[in-house]
Length: 554
Image (cartoon, rainbow, N blue to C red; front, top):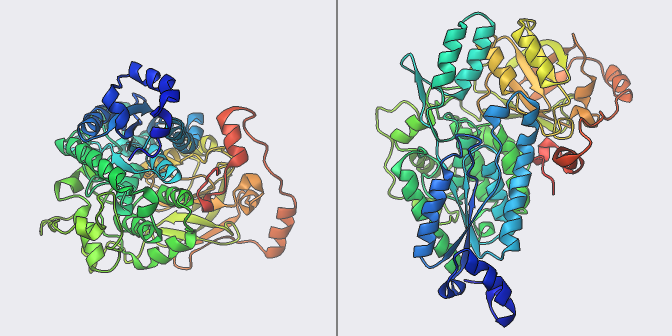
């Protein structure tokens, strides 16, 4: 039980270590207990994480009363919602690596025997899991929980409503007072963005992987259920330490397939592709875009959740959360029920007593009546994306788009053109040099996609990029194009007025020019000069892989 901490605190020669720890509250008896890290992502940077310190305090008390000695520490987080559309957004995906590295450094450096990690926003959640698998010490993940919806004119709204309101305001659909009212009401308190955006998507994926407790992904941040979940997760961690049950005992190829399946069924974020590839990398498990293709072809979209659907995560919580859906997917053969979880039981056993959804609920469809018969996350390949790209096709956008390229070499220039009314119907907006290296940091294009939707062009304009999208993005969008433009990928050769064809049925994306012309243009390509020359972004650009392998740095 004290596999790591004993090396730091046992014996006369470790007296200096014990002396340091006495100053932070250790008593004689505590040196005989497993030392358990409380890895908190609390900050006042974002409402997603503003309450997590309260959960960390609950975990500390629970660990201390269940045979362990809690050791609290903190790490950073970046708010996508605040930095979106700015230079600051370049740090978002980079922060995933920084957070994972920082948890590794503390847990390994301080000889902790296990840890419980808290995540509440897009990148700190996969980061926590990446650290869990990299360290492979007993550990449990706790999700901070979803936000309650804001209300404006008797209608539920959220952060995406604000982004889309900006587009409506630019187009004269709403006035400045209306925009201000939406801005004030959209975020009522703590918790992660309220639709099936990246945070809620990853919470469900992590639960499906077995690294968090049953239905812990479907709780509101301000609920008593979240406090109870934290207490029970702490107890589960102590059992994992006793049994030496580690993350790599839990996360297997089958459990990763479960995660992909639940993401497809829920209509989850494109970011899940990047994060699950990165998590698999830490687990030393081979996972590729082909696995997403294979599972997507057989998994229906069942959840009518935002951004493409009508309902919020808080509304799903009210009808029973994600657990009844997982139970159905297991019973009907879509998910593997025999995968181990942090409870020490299989996921099927964990769901044994879960009741089905109310008969009259409208959020989750039966598999016999899906919103879409196959997955919404489509892997596209073609002469623009030979290593793959990710399209989010809910079915409402159609499955085919052909249009005229409008090329921009940054998100800012693209957004300026949209808000100025310079994008016409039938356009394919091309945003290049926003990939992992070219960004650096692979920014999310929520501002442009929301502006498109806000101006009523969602069905008439497509957007493709080597950057990525927020979980809140919807419309005909294609991201993660690999290889990216900045390293000489073929996206670099696209010019204004080129014809671009996107076909979800054929799973293809192509520029409609001759092979001869492609070869001619490619001969003229070169790597794009880095936008930075020092600091974290520069380090990241030198180390990061392409999007089709998860944009990882190790």
